[in-house]
Length: 620
Ligand code: HEM
Image (cartoon, rainbow, N blue to C red; front, side, top):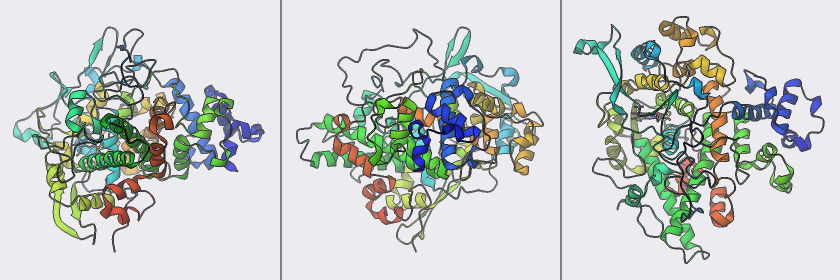
């Protein structure tokens, strides 16, 4: 039984393994991460060795890459007295009962690099190479290159998830600008413009240490983008009847005076986000119906129904992300096994009799999965980090156009929307000006853009965002944000994340065109390559991976950590807190089921694939 061989208890002759394997085995089971060895192309290892290697990598990174930005005594404190700690709170307080404000809305982002290396770049290098040249010459799309292994729902999904986990906020700092001269040949110069300015991120400055930034959303995986993160706003989203969220008469989310859907977080809105917010509100309301219809909870009031439905809906969302979205983006057997291990554990049902107290924490996590196990903070309070945010700069996923097709016969309906039309207020016209099922079907069958150089939508480099002080070049902003927030550039980032740095430009990519494009901007200065430029250029990638190994290294650390540190995914993932009906709902659902029951017309289409994020097979 190969699965058992990964566990200390079932691998008595571990010393007969090849050298790398025994080192990794020791690292995972006995906590000896100091023996960590970098294996650059780990994806070529046999399946279970590769899974072990990823486990060892996670341990190594947990030991070396977790930094709290609150110094002792700085963290705000509150008491959880009078708060219902059996439910998720809106602001995220009291998830940790030991440190009640851990992960709460408005608290600081952490770092995955040492604090003394997290200073924003000084002006002498902040604008070099010129961010506008990078955006226009290295990033901007000339011809759309699709990511053929996934559908466009996968792109909306990841932005939807990031809005749950983090945001620096839509406002930025009007009093402090990042400003640099436009390149000499920039077409904008013809209009008389000589410089480009971007507001700095709002931040807290400190004496003799790096600036820190606050998350305006909760750090927890709690669907705060759907439910909101404060009482006042949340009250506008609730029907206060049977635990349900408010929907308009047509069954879709109501629309506010700003023309955007009324939901927990609607910044940077577009049709893809509207689809997902609608689906998850419908799902929440169906969970309420399930509880209401069961004979077990006839006396539950609106709050009890809401609280339990939120727990269940949120955990199902986390499960789908872990065992469906991730394996769709990273289509490799190793990853599928690793993500299943995170959620369910490796042990088959019939072998789950060993009490986890007999197993070390790491072995128990691998054997039984993180879910329902003991919380594991690796000694550092949980918060998302700046480095985590930086690896999700996935704007290249966006399509230039969305052409709606009928879900019954796959024919074009004659409606096409470009980015200026499907974003912000425009999302309404896409969602309500078409059949919801047709829009969702179109997303399920279209591909998003590939995460490579030269595939950043041109329209995103002159984005007219309502309320923004000027037209935004998102390529410029993506580069500047990392530089101003002190996220290390590509090579230093790799060093700090236990990866081998590039010695020369050719080491970054096997693709000669990508290397030539990098050279045009960065010359031979491999240390100057920005994180986003390097990761978009990077190859080879693990087989089937839509993003680079550098990004994946951060993912290894963060994906498990946001589950392991959350009381509602660990200690309190129990029938007593969720109800048995709730746990069963999560257990038997996948995203195909969610789509099938929230938009029944698409049940057959979404079941044409084994994973809802793979391109659905088009109707004959
Ligand atoms: C049409 C859709 C989208 C629009 C209009 C949009 C727009 C924006 C804007 C205006 C910002 C803030 C820039 C700033 O720092 O001032 C931003 C940040 C960001 N976007 Fe997008 N975006 C879109 C889609 C996506 C997608 C699909 C992803 C995929 C994950 C994504 C990931 C991010 C990330 C990670 C940030 C940084 C957030 C932060 O600093 O807190 N965006 N986007």
